[in-house]
Image 1 (cartoon, rainbow, N blue to C red):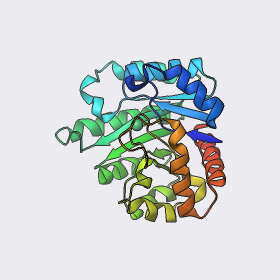
Image 2: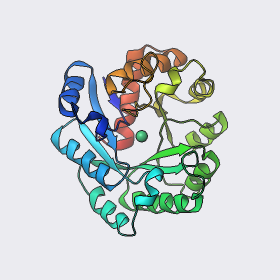
Image 3: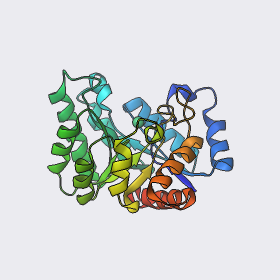
Image 4: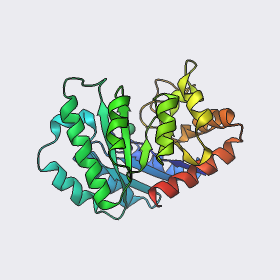
Amino acid sequence: MYFDTHAHYDDRAFDADREALLERLHREAGLELLLDPGCDLASSRAALALAERFPFVYAAVGIHPEELSSCAPESLTELRDLAAHPKCVAIGEIGLDYYWDAAHKEEQKALFRRQIELALELGKPIIVHDREAHGDCLDTVRDYPELRGVFHCFSGSPEMAEELLKRGWYLGFDGPVTYKNARRAPEVLALCPLERILLETDSPYLSPVPLRGKRNDSGNLSYIAEKVAQIKGLSPEALAAAALENGRRLFGV
Ligand code: NI
């Protein structure tokens, strides 16, 4: 019943129990589909390897803004090769992160645009990482009216959400919607149509309440679904089913 559209099972936090955990989540925790986005070439390859191993796992390939320094001129050529894999359903996780590194904004923007152009060329959606870079992320995607995808763990304003929704984008909601001090997420959820909501864990990061600080996994998607469902006035089951359909539609799985 759940589609976790953003979880990093290639992360070393899962080295000890990755395969057993995925099998258990799929068999016992209602994890019907999973999308593992890459953050650099090595993690994109690892995400594809998991997708080859497990029929319910899909991958995205991309170079995260935090990995800018590891990106060589030939990296984009290799990324294009990886993106040809039949289980690669998106380009991501890509975007801008001015919290991590505000000194290389122009380089981040250039890498973001090159990967957007690759996605458009291949006809794939993108998975956007936007941390403290709302204005520049919005300006960038505005330049590509035919581009589609999801703003992962959306943290922008209701006005930004409205503009993205008008342009056909999806918004991803993660553990932070369960935090006591979450103010924007409920406002954004209130205006976000049900058919544009995706549920994500960002595992192993961003564990929801009551598990903050612990390693996250897709079994915790239920806490996020419960909170989002409460805001939307739906049952958690109906919300999760809608989000699963949304993920299928966006990523074509
Ligand atoms: Ni992520």
